[in-house]
Image (cartoon, rainbow, N blue to C red; front, side, top):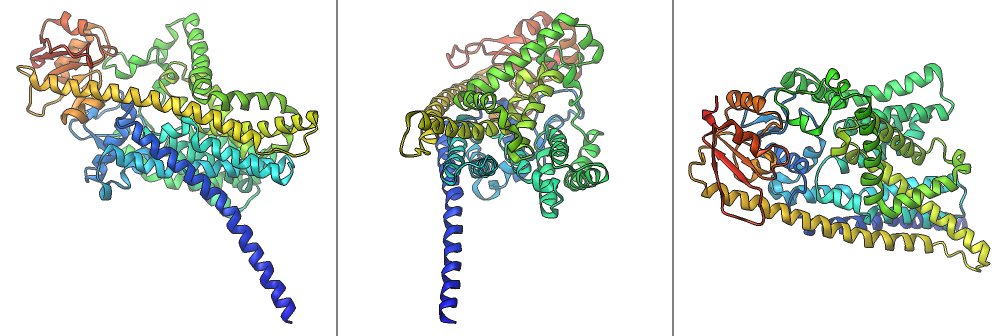
Amino acid sequence: MGSSTAAGTATAESRTGLAVHTLAIPVALYGLGLVARLVAMLGVRFPLTEGSAYYVAVARNMAEGRGPVIDAIWSYATPPFNLPGKPAFEIWQPMASFIAALPMPVLGSSYSTAQLAFAVVGALLAPLAWLVARDAARRLALPPNRQAYAAFGAGALVAVAGPFVISSAVPDSTLPFTLFATAACLCMPAAARGNSRAMLALGLLLGFAYLTRMEAIYLGLVLIAVAWTAKVRGRLLFARVGTVALIGGLIVLPWWARNYAVFGTPLPGQFADNAFLTSNEQIFAWTDQPTLSGFLAQGPVTIVSNLGAALWHNLVDVMLIPGNIIVVAGLLTIVFGWRRRAEISGSSLWALLFYGAISFVLTSMVFPVATQWGTFEHAAGPLLLALAVVAALGGDAFVARVRQWRNWPRPNAGMAPAALSAVVLAMSVLALLFASVQAQSRERQIAAVVVAVNETPGFPHDGSTIASDLPIWLSDALDVPVAVLPVEPASQVATYLAQFKPSAIVLVDDLRASADTVRSLGCATETTPAANPAAPQLTIFVDTRSCP
């Protein structure tokens, strides 16, 4: 009796030790990812994009009890246009602001608070990548030590890679969508087999993913494909996919109701319009809204050239340049390892890759103009994570092959993860330095605009709405309502000024709206701010309310 009790105790202790050891790996990866993101916070102290500034501004308003509103207008596609306190998210989805707002009641409504929330959440991507890689390595029947190194290597790559780290320092939809989509793909194989807990988790995750980006719809197609590979057909397929969709719909239903009450439609107002853009400046149009007839009027040559430009942008600018060695090694692994694709069919890695293919093709083909301003960029995270996993597996396979060629006595399974991580870390440091310089330059520019506005004679300081080419940044910096100035011909801009009646116009970059257009109207007084190298193109017009 005593010996059997002792044996049972030893077995229990062994299992406990194994569980602790296994748990230590994702915890270590989470810690590594968190440190990398905290460092990124120190380097990027100002929102790099107006999109990031938008999400943080709405988060601040929610934390202060104003609700999901913003004091700026970025598009005139969907009314109402009331300022201040315009209802937010007529184009985008709210999850990024929800996450950024969580710690604000306790830690304050600063940009760094939003970054901290994203750093804490974003570090979860590393252990998620470890789970995806561990599953794929087991399906490939790698030896246990190679499985461990490949999985850890994938997690380490995602912990320190620039695209994932910088997306935490620049709060927007990129990070939370990557997180929810990856977690959803991890649940898909079990959900497709009918596991009730997995189906519940998947429904919740798909609902959260939809509240982050509309590309969550593609994940529904991925679920159908995963179920199909699991030999699920007919009514059973309909029942399982329908159950997951119902759960996700219940999560999203309150937001649909809010949108319908505020905007008159449950879907983002500009969702369909983006497919008909002939230029991204149409996003800011007052009268020249995107239409199917306008899109077709471009002619086949322009349409095809836009498609080619979209494919090139999404492949090179979105994938290859930011992802560098991860994308190159991942794509090479897919090419040389294509014959083993059946072994990972229906896995979480397969689901992520399938999502990436759908997203890349559909975004490039359906939104060829809009994607050049970030549509695929903000939805490419799951594909980049999948390629990081594939790169780790490919590096392991390459070292194993070299070991056979060279007759190495030791497996050297840690060589590939170490080499890949070193290269990725070096590239991440360069990317972070570049992002830091960009953020500092934009911060100095906005600060120079504030000084110039305060020194401009006749500038209205009564809190009235002004127009600008950088409405989100200036609304936050000047603490006044700011509406985007349309990029349209002078006659249409005149109509806008007569109807909207901004009290002043501040053009910072003069890229979205031309100062010459406003000058040609002859109904506003142009001032000449003191020369400042931080804002060399700054132009300010006052007395604009008198424009007919």
